[in-house]
Length: 250
Ligand code: MG
Image (cartoon, rainbow, N blue to C red; front, side, top):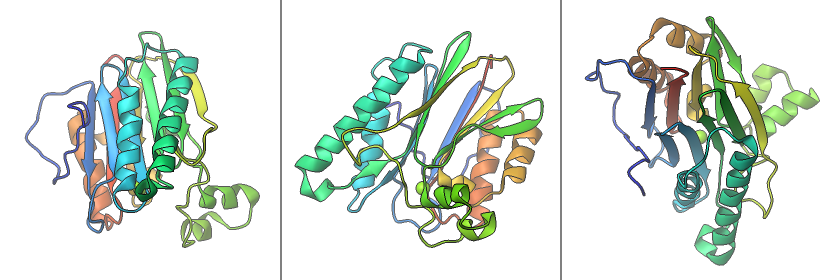
């Protein structure tokens, strides 16, 4: 693992006071034996990867995804970003094919590359990206999960889809096949916009109005990140929880 992969894995700290342009936290949660989420928040590249697979294989998949991003992404070319995510997919898939212990390992990946004028975003899986602008929280990504597919097809109401046993099964993830469909976007980099990338360990535990309230209340991103993780833990912390916050022009 490299130094840019921050795995804090402990209770949120209240020590830091100085406001920064980004903040990142990851926590094992209250139930899981290990943390298979990985994050990146360095040099304008921000990412969350949530690994799945037995015997710590999810750990490996998420780490490969994040490490592949560290190989010098030039902001903010969306096509380059998608190509990099596709490369990560192939690396994970190949390793899963060669090593029986890691067969079927996979990971979500939601990644943003911030340049001076634009922001590129790429996404596979059920981690999420949100943007807070003028106090309004907008979800930028769709979940690639059975629950989201059910919702889209109108098979269940939002409440019931959220409580199906297989709701978190991914319909798209890195590592499942030699190719992957990557959702991607380019946005203008608007000064003051706040972006949140997070794993489903946050969004399955904390409803969106509460996410918005926390982000609006705490302009200090370290505090906001701590409050988000605390909320997930207080709600049960049933999964690893990871949050990456960054502000444009921050
Ligand atoms: Mg998760």
